[in-house]
Image (cartoon, rainbow, N blue to C red; front, side, top):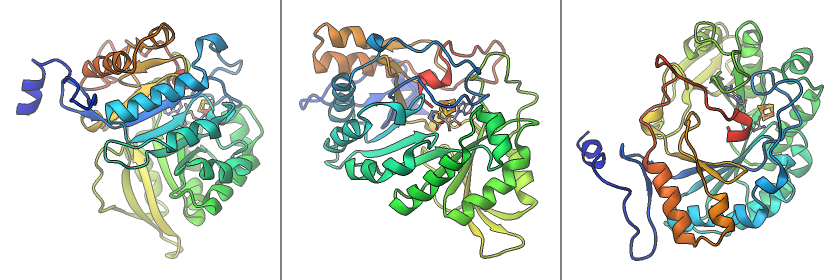
Length: 358
Ligand code: SAM
Ligand code: SF4
């Protein structure tokens, strides 16, 4: 608490003699984890994320090219203390040269002299054919999004008939050993509560770690209602119909998921961990260690931020690495203490989730 009070009267810490600084905010949090959105485009149309007709995609000239993304990633790692990078989107597998971007990221060394930990959040389409190559390029882990294993509901939820491809990719990722393979599932009221137990059974049988995510107000406007949402507590109640759950022992740190050890009540051999990300009902903002870079070169200090810091123009008009690092550090300094979803007067950010990068 003392640290927080002192920091509120300071400015972002200056660089050290080695030209490094940390992405610290005025509430004392340090960002070590960078989410990089590599495209706002997608080949699915998940109902909670996008309208059926898609969105107005960013024009290519407004998006960062490979050299620009690679430069900002290098600055984040070499000058700003980033140690974990997750590539996301939109659908990051649609980014041409994803393998090359991962390879150049893997060549960087953190302030601890280690390889950057590299992860990918993907809908899984086409991953089965690319996962070995991505691993060879330096990918450490994948999160694959899957909200149902029922073929008809998958079509309803994503507006595309692609379930078989996702399931093949989960098998391929497990076989490639980019472990633990994590499966992200968003639960929506009246849509897929019925899938909670089947998804858990499927993931445990595959040795994948399922993480349920509370739906957040980031998709099509007016679709999300706090009063209707399926909460983490609701999800636990559904799971307890079929599993014995005990809290996992390992410390949570900055991880968003609360982990549970789950054992099937009918088949004790079916067991493993299940995570619940209660972003709305039990926010973890106090431990948040993330910074975000959008595909058009903007820094966001929070998913829900209503302000952004564009770096693209500075990048294209000759700013030095130190100047860009300084703009980035200033953007993070002003990070709010919490997302404010439960506040009266909360306003959804103007950018949709697919453009911010989830
Ligand atoms: N296309 C990739 C995918 O689906 O994994 C990466 C981008 S997607 C925006 C990243 C994650 O955000 C997915 O796991 C998705 O389920 C989740 N997501 C999207 N909209 C959401 C919302 N309104 N609330 C909670 N999670 C959401
Ligand atoms: Fe595409 Fe991911 Fe959004 Fe689904 S959640 S529409 S896969 S960006």
